[in-house]
Image 1: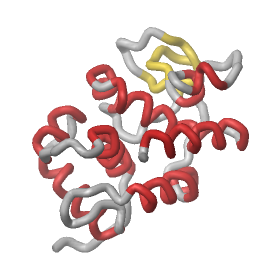
Image 2: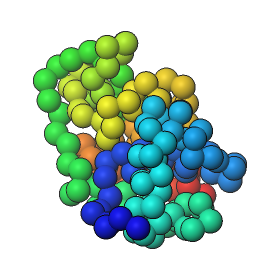
Image 3: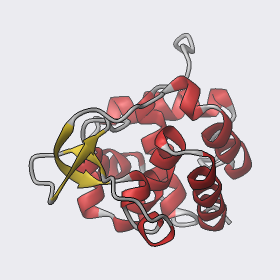
Length: 169
């Protein structure tokens, strides 16, 4: 086995995809195709996630560990601050379900050519996240909640954590 060099940003995207398919059977090739990430990268990501204790050997997401990492570690390992105004896909507290819970004049977006919103851009955890989210609304909502933890304040974070907990049950 290769040396473990820590979790990478796209590992969170892959684990999020596994979280939204929940108890459904999933295959590495399907995850790779739906996320527009190569099979080899998904395979290496799964190995890192197993080594880190975020995924079991039997391909089961360790929900409590994943949630703990997302809540307490993500903003330190992959911090994000909104950049300039640009076209993109709404995310963080600007996307569903947070857009119904948070009243804000600011819009946060992942830069994306085919995006329908204009707002403060933040870099997604993987460049193909917006494209993958167009195909899977559950993934879109889940990753948008995760983005709140990277960009939001304390009140928004509490709301996002409650939503993530509901989705991981």
